[in-house]
Image (cartoon, rainbow, N blue to C red; front, side, top):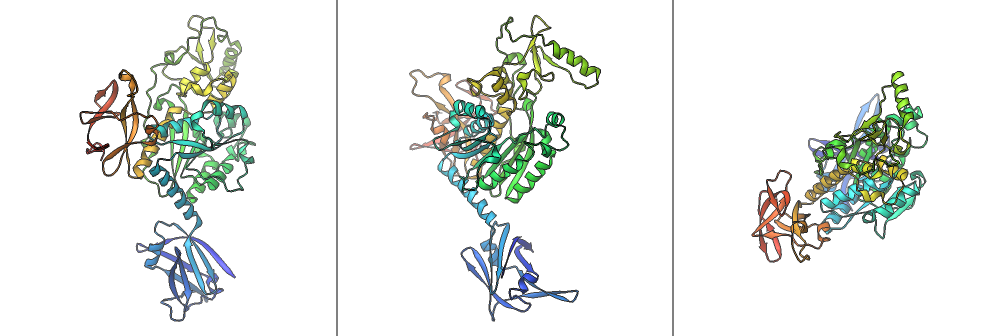
Amino acid sequence: MATIVNTKLGEHRGKPRVWLEGYKLLREGYSPGTKFDLELKDSQIVLRVKEEGKFTVSKRERNGRVTPIIDLNAQELATVFDGVEMLRVFIRQGAILISAHHQHERVVERVNRLTSKLEKGEPLSVCSLFHGGGVLDKAIHAGFKRSGIASSIAVAVEMEGSYLDSSLANNPELWDQNSIAIESPIQAVNLSRQPTQVDLLIGGIPCTGASKSGRSKNKLEFAESHEDAGALFFNFLEFVKALNPAVVLIENVPEYQKTASMTVIRSVLSSLGYSLQERILDGNEFGVIEARKRLCVVAVSHGIDGFDLEQVQPVRTKESSINDILEPVPLDSQRWKSFDYLAEKELRDKAAGKGFARQLLAGAETFCGTVGKGYSKCRSTEPFIVHPEQSELSRLFTPVEHCRIKGIPEELIDGLSDTTAHEILGQSVVYPAFEALASSLGNSLWNWVGMTPLMVELVDDSQPTIGGEDFHWATALVDTKGTLTLSPTAKQLGMPIHVREGQLAVYSRTGSKISNGHAPCEYLPVMMSGDAIMVQSSFVH
């Protein structure tokens, strides 16, 4: 017979410790007084029974029963299992094999994979679940690009064919020749064959059962009770286990933070070797008109340090008012309507004490409420623009305006009907918030592998006349020796670094200087060593 024990590596007086006891030892011949020796073999520790062994099985007496105990506190444990949390102990007649648990091996694999890609400048691979029209993916891609990291989709899953088609057509930078697009419910995807391992897994788990409106509409006591969306978190976790990403990113409505689903997600991700951070991201704080709040959860693998979700800062400045994002819709356009039925509904709701009121906006407002998936249905609680001359008329935001209030690039809705465009946008994210998150994450990953990222000035020297518009910000990296090189995404631009009189313009949010019309910035002294640019400044180190 044999027994397998999966257990944590303990600690005693600052040293690693393995504690085994019970009948599982006795039945394999490890009775009190049995001698054994310790051997190192292929990253394992083997306890082998020997008459003249160095170690002895001890005992504990309780209620007249003698229980064998192996209490191992040897230096070899620290040598073999440095950084290991879980152990696999295989107990059999004559020998006990102690090795790192297979989950530790998966942690090591994903960390080493990520390290290798960063050091080689290779694109990070992404799995996108509940892909939609690719808004979240584009934001993450743009944020990584801002930090100098290339990325591409390895696999994306979306059940709505029109949404997936839109992303394939309007998001060409996300996809490469190896990308796999899956049009399917996530629960129908076959994970039984060995899938491609990825570096980042992202997903906005459908919030139908968690949002206030969803729970009210479907008369749900718990988010998990929703017939279609309630159990999707389970499928999401199955993808995490199968694809072994270094980083997991989840977005959802703020209410999701207090669901049983989120409790399970926290527990499972922790058990798989991830450290979780959570934050509510507010659109107004990240440079957009829409007051949209989303829960953001970032799970980073053990072995990867430095990222702090609370330190993510905006990368965009919000418009001064709604007027700044409006299209020039003619005053006689068919978009302007009376919506008498909504006015009547508002009166009925007030009379019933429901507290609902229409959002009728003149344009001078600095923010608007959330615009959802069903915006084209002209619902009473979502924002409308009032006609500037006829107050009894109003209209919905156009799809382009909907993009702008969320900070979403307008090309993402090219070729879409108003209805489909509003559906994709309404269930998406505040774009600049997640772009900022990915940029901050990318910078922390560079720091983790010993590189300091900087936004430096490049010049398009292919132009016959150089002006301010021919200078561009791009990410460069400084290694521990002070050598400055362009990041992988900056190299793709094919432009040289603009060094003038031994100085380099470096973007700084608190900078006091201007370079070629670019502000704010600071100047960094550099030295040329052949073709290499050397940095010697406290600004970096």
